[in-house]
Length: 146
Image (cartoon, rainbow, N blue to C red; front, side):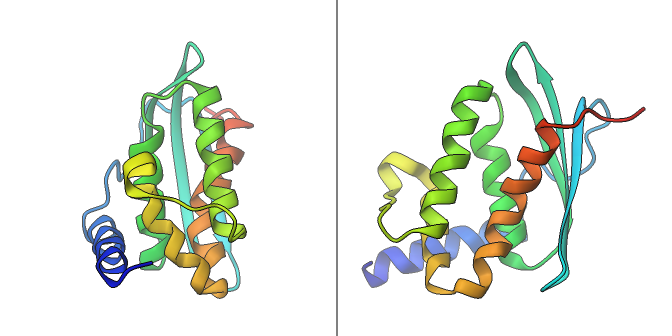
């Protein structure tokens, strides 16, 4: 990865950490889940409103490190409005990107999600970046309790 690209990816992560998108409780959520990483203390809650097989709204709250919060912010931007099948494809792509070195991400095809590729260089931080995505998947499998 070139130094310029590395700098761009770092800027994207810092921006999403400082100004997280889709942050806060989603009052009319149909699904929600909490995620926790006991190794570093990251805590996150993901809220979804699913309508007609699509993610009508997605938000999160987190008490976490910068990588976890940035990953959650990028996730909400990437998944908002997506059909569930398309969202599943994105979650699988991010999982492969974080856990294998055979998946190359580029900004043109993957947008800001490609910034997460740099996390692979820091194995201890992979769980930080993947926690929001796993919490999203958990939210899909459990409906909000009223």
